Length: 88
Image (tube, rainbow, N blue to C red):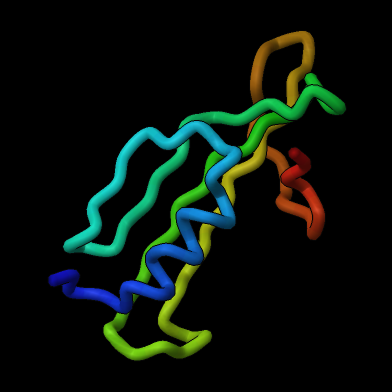
């Protein structure tokens, strides 16, 4: 038995399934991806942290944090996250 809502957990995994998964904890409700670089935009990468917070099936029972970086002459630097940033 999960300590979180199984439907939200499965939906979260299905939604970010195209990203490389670095760590999952189904009891704690945490999914962490590795850095993902889209083939359409090789100068930016994203990393996602999804946390399922509750056993209830509710929109506020899921928290998503996205970290975005862009590539410059000095390497990867943090950048603001924009809607539609992650592309398959």
